Image (cartoon, rainbow, N blue to C red; front, top):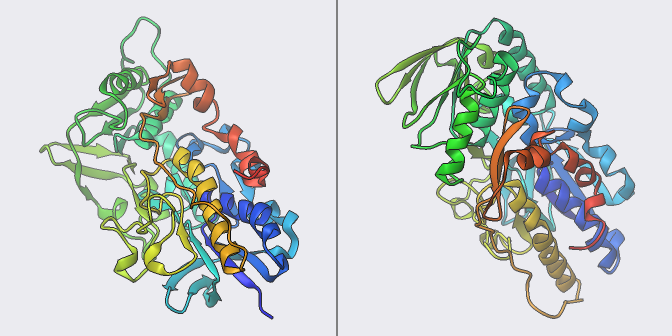
Length: 418
């Protein structure tokens, strides 16, 4: 008899964490646990600490590569045949027949699912900041960028959120150094770095006073901030064009010279242009508009994390879901909720219902965000409380959360049921 497949689409924070929880805490609780198998589908064989990209793009010497990139199959060897890894990309979802189509090295594999977790995340507009495709594409993008960096005299970064500010801070300190204690800004920087922000302030999720502090730190590493402006046009179009695969800019674009027109009427020449604004949900495989919100995230029940319109035992977690604003702390808070409700649903279907109510997710809307600005400074808040610079450095700025990911990827963080 074929095993009932619990299919998880996505091999990052949401997908890997959910898979460990299902294998550790749900399968052992089910009657005939050997009748089930967890199938994790990911276009990349490795999982990485994606927040580290603004510093990692500078060089492999910035982080221990064995900690930055970790093998997904090796992390799940502990579960034996209860787990199967599929190195592929979801291309279609038929929630009526309960089938996911996956492109595996050019061949389509159709996977029947008993339960489905959509954790496909979101892609960045620049290939520098995560697995828009796979690890080979990311590393090739970094290589092209690093080769162009020494000759660059002008760099423009578009995006006043955390990724833009962190990238500007890292490149500013790496290329220009840092001004002394008694200087408000770095005079005569070696490389002209410009950060273009659409808002009146940087870091819109933080209070203006904290955002202003980030701006002063950027000035000390030679970064000029242009606010209330958007990049309207890029010439040549390479930096905004598709690369022919539908995955966004290609490898060569990260090192291409560009002429930028802003919507405030000004223009800027850049030896390197980095789009660091926003993300796009990875939901191209979902064709039914009933499953999507207006911004193309998965239409997720905000309390149970089920995808109600997709039928029984379908869930979403991570940046692809509509239940919360994208943030790693929101994902980690959602894992105990989604796994508790998966367990309830699977036990009920097996004739062993749990008493009580569904576990409910509640988005934490308190001001929480930490943004390093270079290797020694940072701004941020946690649970509504402003953090001093050294605390941001201590918690995030030292290694961009790399200290937290070892237990996460290995499953040790989920040893106890949430």
